[in-house]
Image (cartoon, rainbow, N blue to C red):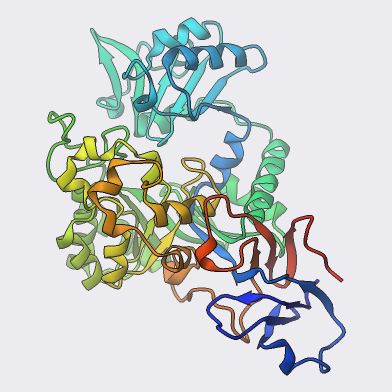
Length: 500
């Protein structure tokens, strides 16, 4: 349906409105039902039964093909020990040529250590196994996988420091560039399999109320698959390509390039100004300096592209800001911006640099206070301070790192680990958001140049969500979507919504 009437609704940010009329995919009327009763065109109608109607949501940072691929992988989230990890790998070993898994976190393990190749060998000796940590910046390979990727006997010079070695032999633990390197040796699933998996991801996104996805580190193959399966009523993807692929891509959906300034807190590769509190021997990894970033951003600007800079640690965020200050760049956005003490918040604000944040990290990084110390951790995921400084913020999942479901992120931004008793709440209770503030982070904002936050107003594209809640204050992590409308078409509908 490109035209319909939603009535008996609680329309977000409109105190009096209870009706929205959509004509040809565009919002034609927002207001009281009584003002148009008797003059209504004969269109399909949806009785919202008092439910909240909001603009459709945007995920400003996720990995579309990565999420599609991991749908076929072993899900290792919530694993509580290396013994349990080995059992899961062993059970999966029978059916696959390569055993691939993702989502484990050694901070949850009884053994309080990283797994290594010998652990994996006990679970799967005959088949190659690669298990990626929840953050995506660290992985462990068994001996067979080390052999097939060439790392067992010969570590390329450019990967020195990214492949852990003890007594001259790799332990199986790899980080950052080495993770990308090994996956070049893993056979790709068949294209049809990837198309089906990506279609399922888009349908899942629609079921959460998402209408727009910003897909990071995209390759030519990923964009081709998306363009073959995309439909106007499915969530629309925009791509930030890898540095290697960007120059060759002609799709109008490619709007930027993605680069890395540092790694992750979980792998202790996020680049900090001061050493890690729980490992004073390291400040993390600097993967790019401001000169290189300036060259990349300058070249991207000539092609009309944005640069999305992954910067998690305070040193990395500062380096990105420094580049903007020195070069006067206007095409940079910072991905994550996880550790932002007051001096960096002020500079982000002064330079009008937008940031893309991932609220569910608050829950997943439950160990962050120990890793950074309470004083620094006060400024981790400091969303309230960023909002108050007038910084443009878009929220996202970073899926498959975190669940795609944006309502889990909204809830994390509101509750800030209070319900789970997390130390981060004690370190920074003032950074918890009000429900409206948390929801607004998912309404797009000018994360893409020339775009505005989605609003429910006349003349706007009809991208709407009927939420299974009666007002914003009743949003919780269990919030479900009753229906998603993209460009005036039903993208998703639950069983209890009737169209008449």
